Length: 301
Image (cartoon, rainbow, N blue to C red; front, side):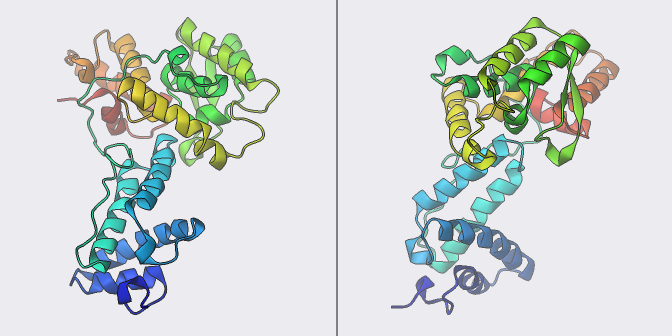
């Protein structure tokens, strides 16, 4: 019996490239899809699948949800995660000669939509007591919405040290788990932030970070953290924990400018104040460009 739908190779990546070339796609398109599909091939092999005939929607969705976890943790851009899934669809469609039913990166895999400007309102404040999660999971959710942390930053934080710094200096230094290794400081501007840090410190217990000491980052991200992300999504309609940073950004924008963020229906009344607020929020969220802030609070037009 032929393997990989008879595309002339027993290796899934090579067979996928040959199938793509048969569609008369351009060299760069074939190369891009093949390179991204090779990452899926490694995932499939880890899950006991070594031939295209055994690839199904459930396997692709499982892969996509792992990508969604990485997006939510701030480790991967939504656009790249979506492209990875789209390349699987392209290769499998070519390999099955059009019989493959595409898997949606957003609807089926829950990967955050790629959008440079936020048009929907920021998620409401999550009452973690209603999420049916444990203390550590609740801590990550609260740190995301009250301090604007990525889920990886919240998970790797030494909350006890952060609480002491918050009380003493009025800021929290963020260095572990940051995107690109960028150090930043988040200001303490309200009592709710202190309460979230106290709860996180209590959940941390004798561990070195909020994340359970007996787990590594990968097992936590794909286990307890995914459970938290899915609970948040179900409770708020948000894509996950990462989307809660929009709540922090919107609240900071209103505090800095005196009016609601554009995504919440506010109108820009002072463009200089708007730009200054965006610059400050970008720094607090760990971004180097103020344009990125539009995906949290809405555009400037």
